[in-house]
Image 1 (spheres, one colour):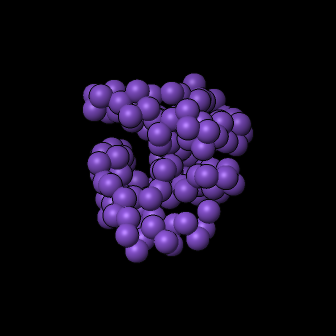
Image 2: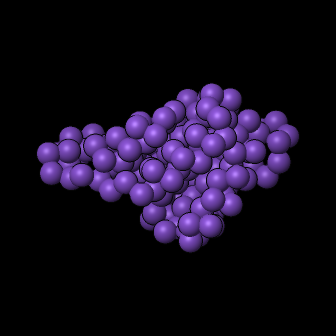
Length: 141
């Protein structure tokens, strides 16, 4: 799977760790930046990552920041993106299974690194349940 990834300075450290995880799982990663922990304006990196997913350039995306809230808001402004802010393995599973999320948002300042990696792994592995959930997803697009 080709995965878009983007972060601001507050999510940079986790972004780099997640890139290693993704490569280890056999995924291709397109990194939209940022490329250091120097302060930046997060929409400059989050929007292009979300657009990569919406355009079909990447199958899924992961965006990161301090809390993940702003990143989810920016990503969800891109038509065709269903970004879920997740803080547990369960929220990640449900975001895929019930909401068919195609972008995951994480907050580096809100969850431990090991949990972030677990969330990514579960989110990538969980299929959309379809069926009755598909009608709800279609209604929001």
